[in-house]
Image 1 (cartoon, rainbow, N blue to C red):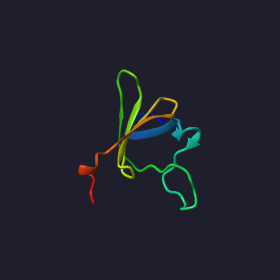
Image 2 (cartoon, rainbow, N blue to C red):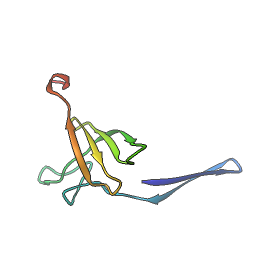
Image 3 (cartoon, helix red, strand yellow):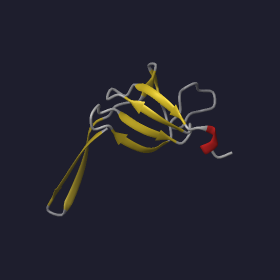
Length: 88
C-alpha cells in the first residue's frame, strides 16, 4: 500500500496511491475467510521493510510465523516460530 500524507491550513489529507495484494503461488492471501476456503489466512501484527532489498517482513499471528514478501506481494519465505516459544 502506498499512501500520501499532506497537511495544509490545519487540515490533513491521506490519499491511497497504490495497493499490492499478497499472494502465495498465485493464490491471494486474505484476512478472514470461511472454513470451506483453502486460501491462506493472514493476521498481520507488524510490518517492516528491508532497507536494502525492499522486501516486506510481516509477523503473522495465525502462524505464528514471520513471512517475507517481495515488492510484488509474492511470498518468498515463511519462518515458523519454534515450538518452545508457542503458547500451548
